[in-house]
Length: 155
Image 1 (tube, rainbow, N blue to C red):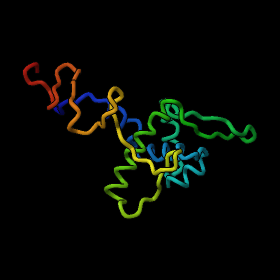
Image 2 (cartoon, rainbow, N blue to C red):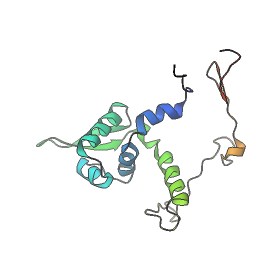
Image 3 (cartoon, rainbow, N blue to C red):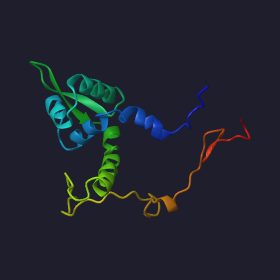
Image 4 (cartoon, rainbow, N blue to C red):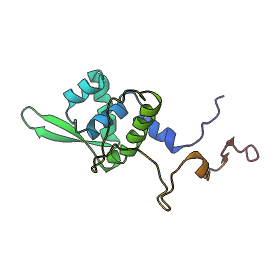
């Protein structure tokens, strides 16, 4: 019998946006690409797979379909507030890829409105300190679980 996996918001989020092409769709929308054909071209997603991903993201409230033509009916995809909140995830994934996969030839460089290249950093909302591994601790709130896994004393 398979043991239950740790309850986790990361796992729940990956169930939605961890499918192939889902984050690439969000990348395109964040770059201002909103129409199906261009999203398909820029992600390389097969049309049927892209349709499924877009429908799932719309159903989950991450994207919304907005009509831009009545005859024939045509739609574009826009990020909802929930979808816009995924922007930092995209930025930190891009920063990791720039450091570890594309250090010599970054394919895209995002600039802040001040003109400087953007550097994605996660900080504490309270003190502004950078959130690195050494500065974090986990407060596991799921009954029967500890930071290392299931609490064997209660199992």
